[in-house]
Structures are given as structure tokens and as C-alpha cells.
Image (cartoon, rainbow, N blue to C red; front, side, top):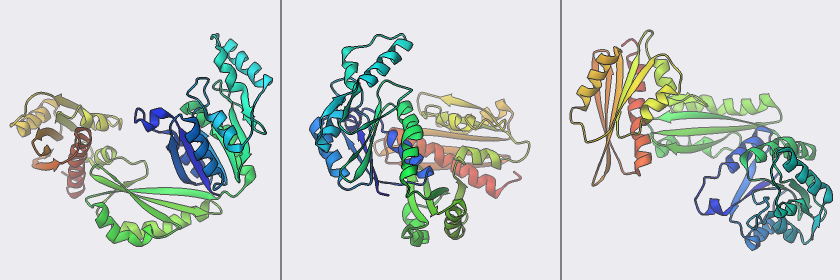
Amino acid sequence: MNIELIVIGSELTAGAIVDTNTQTIARMLRDSGFEVQRVAVVGDNLEQITAVVREAADRADVLITTGGLGPTVDDPTREAVARAAGVELIFHPELWKAIRARFARLNRPISGNNRQQAFLPAGAEALPNPYGTAPGISMEIGRALLFAVPGVPGEMKAMIREQVLPLLAKRGGGEVIHTRTIHVVGLGESQIDDRIGRWERSENPAAGLAAHAGMTDVRLTGRGEDEAGAWAAIAAAEQDIRSALEGHILGIDGETLAGQVLRCLPAGAALASVECRTGGMLAGVLSREGSESFCGGLVLTGTEREDFPAVVGQWRIERQVTHAVGVTLQQDADGFRSDGVLLIGESAQQIRQRFLLPQETAIEGSVNTVLIALWKALKQFPSG
């Protein structure tokens, strides 16, 4: 089934906010056995939305739009869908009554422009929205079954779950889809590609690479008629990929870098952190794991600390811990320089790396660099 998404909002095309709806909808569809083939993002422009909907409706089996169903003048999705279908907008008194009743229950004043939310393209059906005032739209347009859902994330997610997915299930064509994400460190994308390229050319399972600061994810997608079939497709590739990337696999799926570091600490060991000019990111990712093995972090600001290794050592003494990790980020004419310190028992290690990246990405990269080095050191000296 060819499914396409159209994400509507000038705040998205202007870069004012991040589009999270695409990720949410795609994941919800995937978990129900459907896969998105194409995504378009368009601003709040009636003519542009009409053109994009008309084009996609001639190509897709299912078309989902999100956004532009509000009551204001910059919410043109209803009219755009009607124009693309070549039909008029029809006022539905029962929808207007339900909208007014919802405002009354919320004890909120209602404006006259809310009335436009009671209009639907001729031939369309309303999708109930118990979490907001804007009904969704369901209708056949071109060769596609179109669903128009709100852009508000909570309303959108509920409507996809409670309205769209059941209707898609009746239409059929879904299969079971599962994914496995393998987190890889110490190898770049091109090196990984050299080792597992044949799986990237495979259709089932399909493998894809996604680079992050200091890490690369290998994402495997398996399809089958049932759960067993989907996981069997993944297993066929996973064993081979694990062998090809041996020594570089940090973890899988929801396992995090900080979590793996803390899990590698020897029994009874405790870890503290020191960081400078990182905004507290190192302590933040460690503390979020909720492990008693992390005993707190020191966040420094100000000028460059030439005695940074000594500061880390002193902090370990003050916190009375067995292990300490530190990172400081400095900017110069060529970008950012990261200096890291690992103290593991009686062992000390310094790490230096340069980042030709924006500051925010350089911070993430510097934190990941020292955590990866600590993880490797703990794996090598598990009894340290």
C-alpha cells in the first residue's frame, strides 16, 4: 500500500519549529504493518496545498495530511482538499453543535470563526476528535483514501490511533513490520558500509545507516505475514552484521551510551563527572539513567582550565568514588577542541579531539567521545 504524508504549516517551512508529527505518524503506521513511502512539507498556502494534495492523490493509495484544520485564516486544509477533489465545502449543523458543546464543557468562549470547522468537502465524512475542536476528514480523492488530521500532536496521535488505523485495517494490505537498531561506535559510515553493504541493498530485511555524534545506527527492518516471519527476516541479517562489526557494537534499540557505561562498571564501583562549557550535558545523560553508580557531577564555567586533569582527580577524591570522567570544550579559530579525562582505579587516560561543527553538535560529540572511551576502557579492564 503506497502511503504518503503531507505535513502542513508555515512554521515548519520557516524552520520555527521541528516537525515531530512525521516521525510519530510513520512509527504508528509501521507498528501496524504499513509503511510511508513519501513525505511533503508545505506552508499555509491554499494554492500550494491544493496542488500538493491533487498530485499525491493521483499517485498514493492512502494520503494523510496533518495540520491546517484550525479556525483561523491560516488554516486552509479543508478548502484545499475540497478544491483538489473538485467539490464544494458543505456546512454540517451537527458538527457545529458538537463544537459549541465542547467549548461549553470547557467553559471557554467560542468565536464565530470556529464555525468554519463545521465545514467538510462534499462527500467527506468527519473523523471524531474528542481531544480538540477540529474534526478530521475522511474521503476518497483521486485514487487515494485521504485522511486529514489535526496538527496538534496530542489530537493527531489520538485520531491516527482511534480513527485512521482501524479504517486502514479494514482496507487491508498491511503486514507485520519490526525493527532492530544496532548502535555502532568506532567506525564511520563508509567503513560500516564496506562491511555490511549487501544488507543495505537487501529488501527484506532492509538495512539503513544513520550517523550521530560519535555513533552510527544500523537500522534493520524486517517484514512478514506474522510476528515470527518479521523477526526471522531480521535475524537472518543481524547475526551476520554483528559478526562484521564485532568489537564496535555498543548496544541495541533503546540501550544508551550512558546506560552501557554505567552497566559496565565493576560491582561496587562509583562514577563522578566533571565538565566545562558543555552545559551540564555529561552529568545530564548519566543522571537520567537512574543508576546509583553515578554519584554526581561538577559543572564548571569560565576560562580554560589548564589544570583540568587535576580538577577531575580532586573531584574524585572529594566524591570518594573509584572512577571519574571529565570533558572540557574550548573554541579556537579552527572550531572546537575537546579535552577528556578518564580516571579508572589507578589508571588515567587523556583524550583530545577536534570538531569542525556548530557548538551544540560539538558539545554532544565531545560528551559522546569521552563516554565511548570510558565504555571501551571498562570493557577492556572490567575488574579495574
